[in-house]
Image (cartoon, rainbow, N blue to C red; front, top):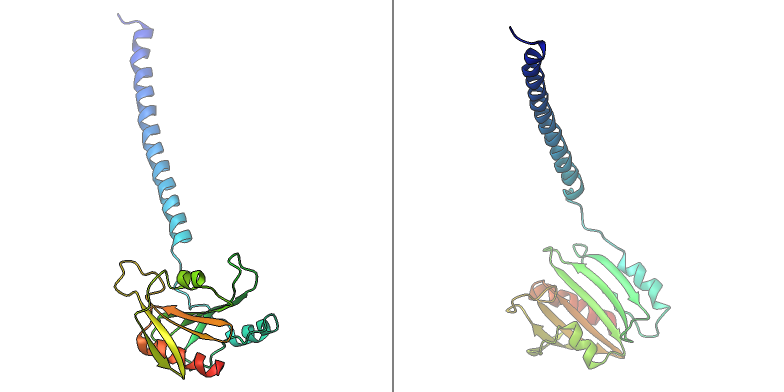
Amino acid sequence: MTLPDQEAAPTAAERRAARRANQTAFNLVLALIASLGVVLFLVVVVVRPEMEPRTVDFRQIGADAQSSVDEPLAVPDLPDAWTANRAELVGDPADGVTRWEIGFLTPNGEYIGLVQGVDANDSWLADQVHSARSDGTERIGGLTWSSYDRRDVDDPGNVEYALVTTSGASTIVLGGTATDEEFAVLAAAVAKELS
C-alpha cells in the first residue's frame, strides 16, 4: 500500500524540474534577444554612411577675418577641383602668434594645410614642421620656399612634407600629404596672392 504523500512527492519534484528546464530555455531566449538588441544598437551607432567632405568658403571667411588683422591674409585663388574643409583666424592663441589657417583637399584627395603666422618666432615654426630640419630651398612664384620632407618618418601624421616662406610679418607654412606638384600649385597661388 502506498501513501498519498509518497505518490505526490515524485510528481512535485518532476514539476519543479520541468519548471526549471522551461525557465532555462526562456532565459536563453531572453539572453539571445538582449544580445541581438546590443548588436543592433552598435550597428546603428557605429556604422556611418559615407559622407561628402565638408566644404567651407575660405575666401569669404578670409575676407571677413581680414578686418581683424593688419597683415594681408593669404587667400589663394585655386582651381575649382581644390576645396577647403576648414578656415579660421585664431586671433588670441596661447603661443601669442595670431594665425590664419585653411585646410585644403587637393584634386587627388590629399591634404595640405596653410598656416600663416603673424609675427611668428622660431619655436612656433619648429612646432609647425614637427621639429624637422629644412632639406633645401625652392623658388616658386617668385618666393623662396624652404622644404621639409618627413615622408621617411615612421609616423609623420598630417605633415609629411612642408614648404615655408616669409612675406612681410608673416610666416607661411604649407604642410600635408599631397604630391610635390600639388604643393607647387598651392605655393604659386599663395605667392601670387602675397605679391
